[in-house]
Structure formats: structure tokens, C-alpha cells
Image 1 (cartoon, rainbow, N blue to C red):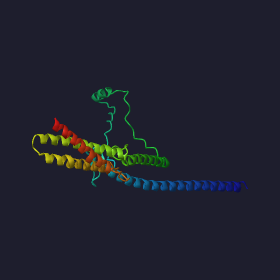
Image 2 (cartoon, rainbow, N blue to C red):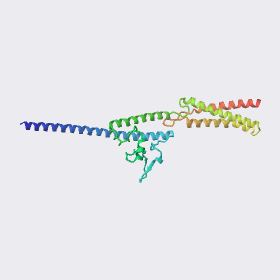
Image 3 (cartoon, rainbow, N blue to C red):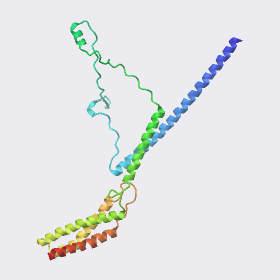
Image 4 (cartoon, rainbow, N blue to C red):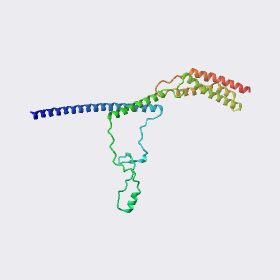
Length: 264
């Protein structure tokens, strides 16, 4: 009976070991399936992220570029299929073996006995943990999303005076155009005093020509630099404000300067 009991105990032990092995195999299969699902999800996410970053870079004038190979091109040897590989560094030279030759023995005595031994074969790298690598890739993707959203928020603001309101921005732009127009009027007054243009031409440019140029210059500047680079509608350009500054304020200042110049 003892032999049969030992056989039965051994059979139960083998059955239990097989069940444990099956459970481990099932658990490993489940982990591999989860890892594969995570890899597929990350692949889709990274593909969509690359397209989003490429579109964002094109919108702000910074084309999306992939990472370049490490090392200069001259350090990479061409292969038969056209690909290049970086040349490996040359390791330290091996010390000479002892010999009975007196000349070589004297050279060996000059070698520092405390020098480190020659490096042996490199140890194999430790196995990678798939879960840790997936977590690292996911963290890098989250970081790229965060920086991308920051760039998108920055690109969603006007390039000209982004923190100002549209009205204040329009006032500053039209006033700047009016100042340039006033300087142009001053130049025309000097030209008229020199006798190169008549009074009618000076009056036309002072009352209509230069104000119109100043107005359209401010209008175009607001349309070019007063709107966001990505998304969002263009803010109002406040044409009434520009009309008052360029067609009323600028001619009034120009006429006052003209009267002062004529009176002087």
C-alpha cells in the first residue's frame, strides 16, 4: 500500500504543479495581451500626436522634424543597401604576454604593475521590464501633450501685443501709423518750402493721401499681426477708431503743423 500511496501523492503533486504552471502561463498570456493592447493604444496615440504636432508646427512656422542620427555623417560607414552605421570606437590595446626575450622583458618591466587589467567581455544588459518601458513612453507622451498644449495656447494669441485688448491694440497701431503719417507730412512741408511741389499737391496729400495710407497701413498690420496663428476668429480691427485717428486727428495735427510752418 505504501507504494500506491506514494504513487498517488506523486500524481497529486504533479497535477498541482501542472495547475500552477497553467496558471502562470495564463497569467503570462494575460500580461502579454495587456501589454500588446497598451502598445497598440500608445502607437495610435503617438501617431495622432505626431500629426497634431506637425500641423501645429506648420501653423506657427516651425515644421515638424524627426530626430537626426547620432554623430556626424562622416562617422557612419555606408553599407551595401545604402544605410549607414556609426563607426564603433577602438578599444585599448592588449598588453604583451611575458616572454623570455630580454629586450621584451625590459619593456614589460616598464609597464605599471598597478594598471587595470584589460576589459573582459561586456556583460549582457539586464532584461527590460515591459510595464516600466510602457510607463516611460506614456510619461513622455503626456509631457509632449502638455508642451503641445502650451504652444497651442501661445499660438492662439495675437502676435502683436497679445496681452492687450483688441481696442487698445487697434488704438496703438492706428496711432503709430498716424505718427508715421505726421512725419511724412513734415517732409512734404519741407519739400513744398523748397519749391519742389505746389500748395495744391501739399493740401491733397495732407488732407487725403497720407491719412488714407496711414489708415490702410494700420488696417493691414492689424490683419497680419493682430490675429492668432492657430484657431480662433480674427479680433475686430475697429475701423471707426482708425477713421477718427487717421482721417480726423492726423489732418488736424498736420494742418496745425502747416500753419505753424507757414507762420514761422
